[in-house]
Image (tube, rainbow, N blue to C red):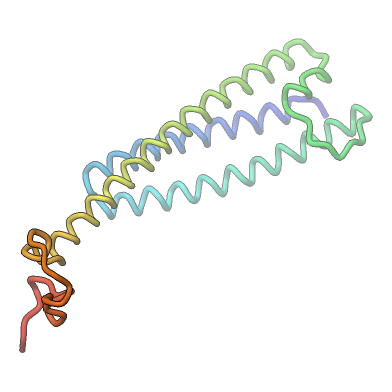
Length: 166
């Protein structure tokens, strides 16, 4: 087995990560547009892509193990791609392996940054929702005036403006 199989799996991983980046951009726009249905659809697509990434990674790891056994290395250690390039003697395959590794790393960095932005947007949205709910639930006059604890009305505590008597 040559390094070609490993390269093909890494190219497939790169394609999947590119699709994850596109899904992340769609997710960001859905968050900004407050489109819950589209956000749910994008998250379903992301989960499907993540399963494919995991499957492809398992196949790549199996191919790497086969490659190492072919080279006479029986170690249980998981060698990195950089370490594996030292065992590739075909210059074209070695260059291609290094190129695909670099491109995959660039995609992973881009995906990590995009996920950080999306996480921040979601946290801001949740903070705004929490703030809005607190505005609706709390009684504004309780917040503005100090009352001695003995003089507070215990029955009125925790009531919102939507509470009514039937």
